[in-house]
Structures are given as structure tokens and as C-alpha cells.
Length: 276
Image 1 (cartoon, rainbow, N blue to C red):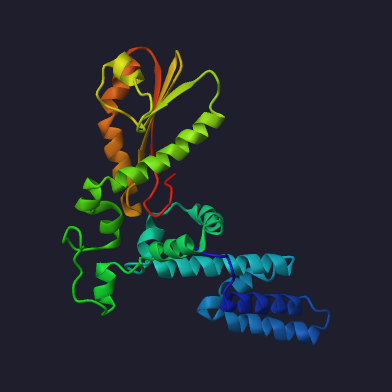
Image 2 (tube, rainbow, N blue to C red):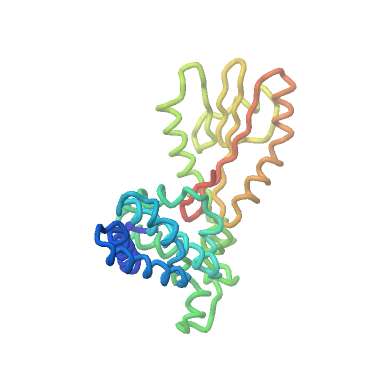
């Protein structure tokens, strides 16, 4: 995550590989033989196993740089995923989330940018971290007195729940989705969104259900039910399963009216990562 700047070690390995590749294709037989000996030597090094396979077949230094950077990134991710705190978000994020994450970070204000980076690796100064860092002897959450962790602050504090802070965050994400649908939905469809002061009557009046999916898109033949959840990133799968189970009876009821129905659950993590 971040500005996509290469590490110095990655740049060094990339340049060394390019140099060796050129020596292997040198017209001087002595230089080429020395380069082949160097390749054999580097085969014995664990971090250079790719060289023997790549240098002989890749046509350009540009390709060698790409494979070097890719392998360095994979190695770094493997190291981070093994760490208890910093690896938790990487294990839960989709494989293609890094590109979206980087583009989004670059557009954030400086203070939000810093918070997001620290939240991604669980380095924010919440109670558990302050105690672990030796800056406090108490890891209790001031509002509710439970142990204060990152997931507690972002998703599980009972006081924040009563104050509708999580509901406000949920509605802000839902409003963004609603605004997008308003601009891009085909004219043949109508939609209702379960936001404060918004019209929401289709499900209740037509199907006599007390359930309220966050968004209902419909025309005379099709019904799309969309349910948004903003869970902690490590609990996205649980959130999707819970919401799917909750609305399965409503889906059956809609289908019994000979309508095409599809339920879509959307999970947007409380640190900003979207599930597939």
C-alpha cells in the first residue's frame, strides 16, 4: 500500500539482473563465460533462484525489472501476512485490492491518508496498542470500558452503536451507492433506498414484508435486492453469509410471484476495502 515507490533493494536486484543479462549476451566469449559462472553461483542463493530461468529467455531489461519487482512484492506480502497485526488486513483483502487502494489513497487529504495507512496495518493509538507500546497501562475503551482494539473502535463499541455512529457511516456509503444509481440506472428501472427521509414502500406494499433491504431495484419483471454491510475487513465473509440468510425468505417470496429476483450483498470494510 502507498505511493508505489520501489524499495532500494528491489532496484538494486533489478539493475544487477539487467547487467548480468547483458553480459550473458555479450559478443566477447570470455565475458559471456564469466557471466555464466556468475549465474551458476547465484543459483545457489535463495533470493536469486529466478535468475537462471529468466535471464536466458527474457528479451529485455524491462521484462527483468517487472519480474524482479513482482517477486519482491510477493515476498513482502508473504512476510506481512505472517505477522499478527499487520497481516490481518492483507489476508482479508481481495487479491486485486492493492491497485484500487493505491489510487484511492493518492486522492485523500493528508490527515485521512495518514490515518488510513496506520489503520491498514493496525498502528493507530488505540488502547491495546498504547498498552503494547508501553505508553499506557490501561487498554479499556473510555466510553464503554471494554478492551479497546481497532475492531472494537471501528465496529463493536456499544456506546458508538447507541449514538448511531456506525449507522451514520453505513448511510454515507449507502448514499454514495444511491447517487451512483441515480446517474447510471437505465430508465426502465426504478429504485428505492432505505435512507432517512427517502421513499421506501415497494417491498412493504407489494410483498407485505417487514424486511428492508438497503436498496430495491425493480421493474415489472425483475427485482434486485441490495444489502450493504460495513464490517471489519476480517469478517466480510461472515457478514455476507448473515445477510444472505436473513433475506432468503424474502427472495423466495418474490420468486413465488413469478418475478426474476437477485440478492446482492455488498461489503465495504470499515477501513475502506471492498469485498468482491
